[in-house]
Image (tube, rainbow, N blue to C red; front, side, top):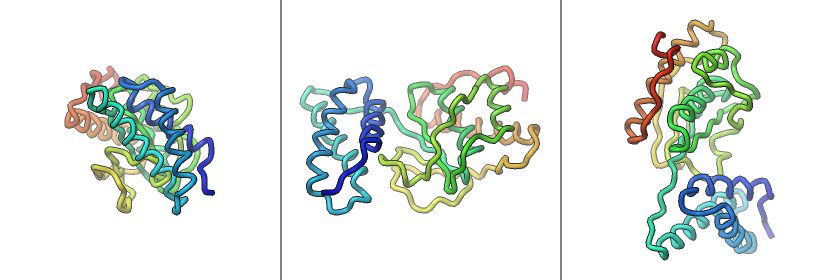
Amino acid sequence: MTGISDAEYNAIVEDLAYRYADMFSRDVVASEVATVRSALEQTARKPDFLGMLIAKQSRDRLAARAAAAGQELKPVPTILFVCVHNTGRSQFAAALTKQLAGDAVHVRAAGMRPTEGVNPAVAEVLGERGIVIDEEFPTGRPYDVEDAADIVVDMGCDLPRYPARRVIRWDIDDPEGRSVRTVRLICDKIERRVRSLLADLEIPAAAPTEATAAS
């Protein structure tokens, strides 16, 4: 019998509970995922895709449950920002998007060759915008994400094909080794792109901070 780890199971539950928080409690989501997990672990022939299959079938069950109650399943959109190391551009974009849109979006960050930590200059510029990263967005590779994001933003790392509904490429300079002054300009460019994306998604964004308005 092939199975997923409890950590993978919990990650799927947390993701779906977040995406459908307005409709279902975490206990309801966990129950549906557990049911799907039990069935698929008995029959799955491709263990590498088991987590993705569990997530998809769990969504299908939640959609059916919503339909039975006369409701439409409306998830919070997930945006995945990807750069090379997940220490600069993607971290800034993810943190800023979370600040601007709050719970209206689900934000993730990943790197093609992920390393630990956050670029100090990027962290400093985030601080100027009132964002303190106590714990950076989880480091991982984009294809490690169990449930495909609704939107994937390639921030200059030439992503291979990715099973998202929408893939966007932003040509953004790498802040690695750059001065804080240059990093501010890079982050300003990212902020303009983030605000434009949120506007395209019809998601209200917070007003610019004093530091951003002055830059």
